[in-house]
Length: 114
Length: 114
Image (cartoon, rainbow over all chains, first blue to last red; front, side, top):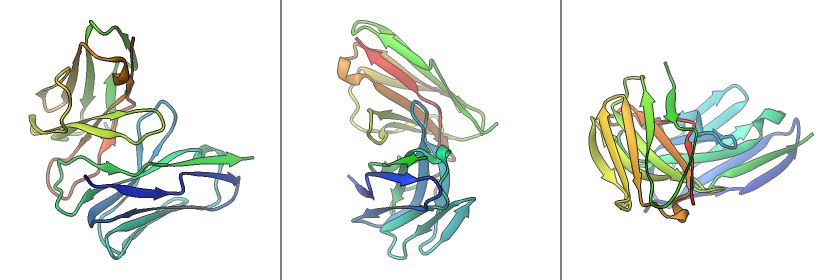
């Protein structure tokens, strides 16, 4: 099946620092989604990307859909303690339709030191 | 209402028990999903329902039996589970048409099989 390579696996940063994480795929993806998951909760959708080259912001979050359709990155500016959690990239392959399962990256565990 | 609800929040069951997980959404979504998530791993797709019909079964063992009684409800019936089935079970919903991949997740049911 499809696999997404997400990096880094974990990040230890100071409060106020900027964060960057990315996902790559060996095949084309039609859509890229970024989710955040807190312990014991379900993933929460942060940003959705639909077009190659698209750059989208949501507050301090910025994400881009790579022009090759095989990668995406998420940036968080000026991190705060509530940014702690696991961030997952997810997507649907090019041949996928609406009612199709998502393929998830392995997640980036963000830890913020005060 | 932009929420997916799941009950119960926690469930402990023996290997001979029969139990059910319930999921509900009132966003008018016609696609609903079950995912299984082990600790420190990404969600893995189990089942997809589109317009109340099972459209994808990711080779899930028959001890897991999904049911979609109507467009707002999704159940997962459990019988004769194994301890390795202990996990967080996530329900999600989305629009069913092509080009609508944004899936919204519930908080999950934490299942422990003794």
